[in-house]
Structure formats: structure tokens, C-alpha cells
Length: 112
Length: 118
Image 1: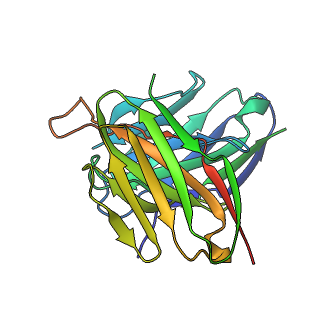
Image 2: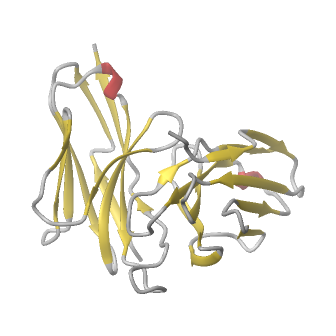
């Protein structure tokens, strides 16, 4: 069965650079969520989109922005990267916001 | 602020033992409680519990929700080394943006790190 696809899988950037993470939800899923998981931490919700509109916002820094496109894929744009942004970034999708969220494999971002 | 607390944080048992993982929550507009298993990669969905007192089972795993006492437990019987993982509990609030619920993010607990020794 098709799963959530994220790219890239690994990314190394330097401080103050920008990064763009991509997420392709499971086919026919119109709802996408972004989570950040630091080392040894639980996933922290960043932002979500439902039918291409921003739905909920969590602890997303102002330096980050995201959008969902007409094909339902989503991109997380991160600017002025800081060392503390080093983490695993998960995307999750669902066909119904009241149901379970399915997680992608994550993008491991390292900021040097 | 929504809060999910899991206990124990870490648990080491021998293969064949039965374990019970606990999760309590304080969530505004609670909808459902979800359990995920994470093995150094993406969280894998296990259960979603919305109604109180109804046990969900999948093989050796089972889970139940108590909405009056605001907690859930995850049981694993006859544990195997492959059960070693971090088990995450997460609360899903009832979205308010759309009738039927908005796409609200999950609030996770810190997880229980389960180690099964052969």
C-alpha cells in the first residue's frame, strides 16, 4: 500500500541557510500535518492543512512557513536555520481529520 | 495547555512477560486517544480509541480508554524482542474549524521506551 513520501530523507545545512522539505500524502488523503521531533523528544505539532487551507497551527517558528498545493502535496520552508532546528521532521496525512494520522519516514535535518 | 503523560518512561522486561503501558491526558475538546509504535523511524499507528470502555485488540496488543478518569492503557502479552520500541500515546482534539472537525495536530506524550530482553 502506498505510504506518505517525504523528501529529502536527509539534509545537512549551515546556520542561516534555508531548507525546503516536501511531503506527498497517501493518495486520496487531503489533510497533511507537519511534526518536529528533536533527539529523544516526542513529536511536536507544527502546522496542518485541510483541503489546501491552513487548518491548525502549533509550535511553528515564524521563520518557518508551509503550504499545500493543488495536488495535495505540502512543502515546509525553513529560513534562517538555527542549530536548534536540527531534528526529524515528519509529515503525516489522513483522509479524515477525525481519524488516525499516518506518518511518513521523516526528513532528518542537521544544521551545522 | 493540552497535556499527555505516559508512564513508565522506560521499561525492561524478559521475553514472554506481559506489560501494561499507561497514558493519562488533559485535553480541551478531547476527541480520541491514539497509540503509535516508534522504532527509530516514523511512528506506526496501532490504535485509535474514541469510546470509553471498548477494548481494541490486534494480536497480542490491546488497548482501552477511560474517558471518565482520562486515561488509557496499552497491554502487550507474551512479549517478543520485536516489541522493543518507544510507544507513543497521543491525544486528538475535536477540531473547531469545520463541522465534523478541523485538522488538529496530535499532542504526544514523552513515550514509554520498552526493551524486551531475550
